[in-house]
Image (cartoon, rainbow, N blue to C red):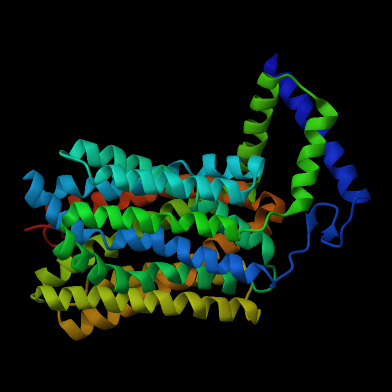
Length: 423
């Protein structure tokens, strides 16, 4: 009975929203179902916020190896046990992304992102007082990961809402913070650990996470959508319980799975992400198996990351000039990424692995902005925040299962050197 009431309420509210869109136009609407993004202006400040956000989230995750060495020595644990910290953080960040999207639809991206920054700050700060790995799993892993889930999806959604023609370029610029920060954070974290110990370094890192609150403050709300939502509440005036259930159901926007295009997209991203992240885990061990020194293997990863960052901007250039549609570019670059993964296993010298690693970095970086850039074309701009959250949740399954599965396969079949992890 409750389901029927919620369904009827949702249909009524949807009809009411359609009427409001037809009547209340503020110059931001291009059709009754979507508004026209400004494609610039303050949107570039939101891109800056996205750049800082990706640096403080994924840039930190990529540079955590400095701390893992200290954790192994301090807690006398295996590196495989310590590596679960980042695995938990990534899993929680992506799997809880629909919650961040739902909250941002209800309260706005600005408030939610700032709240996520505070949670990320608390998670790393509390980790500095840890005396066991379980403590770090819960703080640096789960709590920080949940804070990032409130930051990443809403920020990507906000960028998509403010850009149309330059959307891929804007997303590419924001996502370059991931690769560029990797070059800066690793030596910075090592210097902090050498000077203040890993506990002091984590305290400083937690303070850096507060800059996510600045990122949230830069996000300007889309008032048209907020006014519509207020109209829903005032018109219906349901009970608090019904209002909560209705808001969670509508903000999570599970009905997106009735969109065949979104379903096909989600299934494709699940498969793509199960393989596209493997080199970040296995490329350095694979290089060492091929006889490279530790320095050469680390340099290989750095060059791959640099190619990744450059290709994200290149992807925006191609998308802006409309040489191909966004969907066609996504298919092209994801297919190229798959080909590069196959070729990586063939490299057996530093020059060959370097060339193949750069080829992988370029193809992987080029399709990353398109993952989010294609969503407005599939689900409309107004639903893109919910779509980002749901797609991240689905992609988390592939990201988590792909690298461990390839490692297990490499151990069982020694001939598959591309998936080999340990010896």
